[in-house]
Image (cartoon, rainbow, N blue to C red; front, side, top):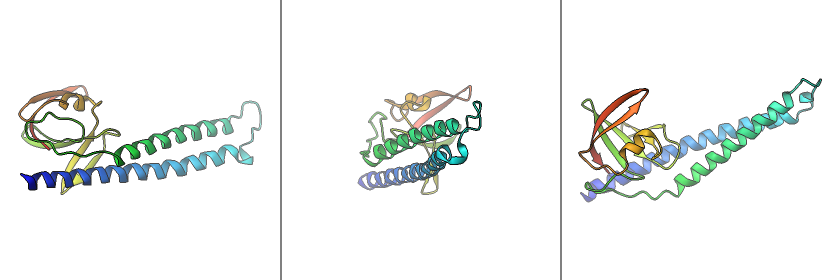
Length: 168
């Protein structure tokens, strides 16, 4: 059981590491795009050529939006870097940082409940793990449940059902 707990912790470290790589890659991309937008907004050629020419204004709005997105990404990175990963005993209810195996139609799906930026799929030891948040429909459904619970959640206008097989 101790070995299983150690492996589960290593899996969570791998999941968080991949989420951080994704967030940092997205941050690098948005930082470059924001720099380009700022340069475009302040470039001599962006100077208005008439009262209806709004290129500089549009570039400045774009740069502002990208800067806000970059700040959100930095905050998400900080949250994941300080995330305390903990093991779950088989009787414990699902909470933040749990890895949940949900069986749907005879197939097992893995979910990691993270604090931010759900919707990413990461791969750990050849298995796909969907990162979800407590605020997502499936996250809200899983929180507080335990192994053996049957859960129903909506996805793309349809209702899906699954059984919680494992929480770690």
